[in-house]
Image: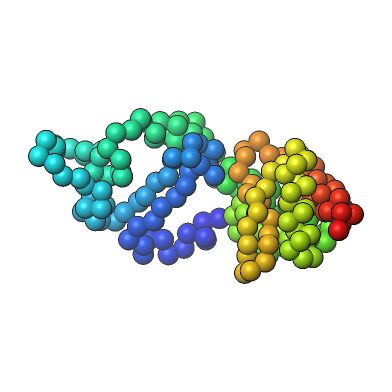
Length: 188
């Protein structure tokens, strides 16, 4: 997957959301910024009662001044998985997304994106059927997906983000898609 980051060294800043990939809380986003001054000028507050130290004052690097130690969960995941564990997790999520897309395509669903990470955009023959299929999937209690639009067309957004997901889970979810579409077609 390293090729997806080609050229990243040219960026002045970038952000990542650890929630989706590492299954940590929602507020575990990170920003990496080449210029420390640019980052602190974006966040630094001023008041006569603030006294800054010569050390890294945390509230100069975040949009909020008072918060719990949100980084602990992220640190724990990175520490326990290590580099190879994170690599394995990312590869597994991507493989599962590719399998999901392949199995859906084989069953007549339209896949709208190249599967380069863990997201799949899928639809049925038309917007009405796609929307009804999504509603049936969400009501099935078998898996959960969200709805969206892609180039003006209704789509179902699949996000493969659970480390515990196995190919048999993908197969069960694909079966739920097929069943949901069949029910939606009968209702039309």
